[in-house]
Length: 277
Image 1 (cartoon, rainbow, N blue to C red):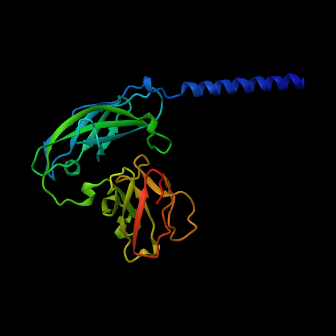
Image 2: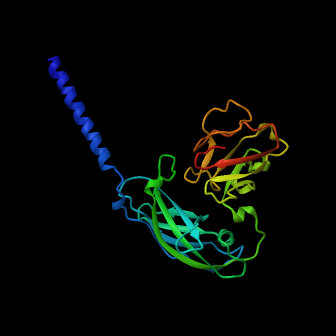
């Protein structure tokens, strides 16, 4: 009887393993089966600082799997999308219909014109492309699943403004618990690390933590929000050593950086690929 029961367990285990393997096979990503997203026309404009937001529509990508996805809009001065830059935008999708909407602020487009080499009061063409990718459990894009849309273009005439580093270079937000660091409000943040060398992943700069720096707590984000998909970088583990030369960060971490307190000013360099500060 024991032998029969043991044999039954072995057969059940084998069937379970086959079932799991089959489920894994069924869930394998097949790039050839994906229907890429389609980007609609983006309106051009003579830009104004107080101009109304511009909107565009798109059809969402179909990855043929029940998975989360994330989208990013890119801009370039070339129809080949050479040296493309991530465009600040608000992207939303109706999950029932797959219809998507992109909202662009005129001030952000104005900054992009200068960032791409345009000038004030001179018509300038920007080319746009929408990227979509499956997202992991941190809502971060899985690079190997990226799909690119068609390319659309629009003409803009920028207005003259004070050009700052934040307008010219890709940047990450430095946000913390002091007034100098925005009091945890992205709307009040004015300190950033910049990709001065245009590497795509190395951001550097000098941060001022203010006179009350003994209680420094801060993080970095890749956008003006806490979405893991754009980067929400705290520490990866307990911070045992004070004032370390390097510090490993982690996307989606809820633990703030607290090991730099002795000085008011700190120069940092952050690699957003390795997340090494």
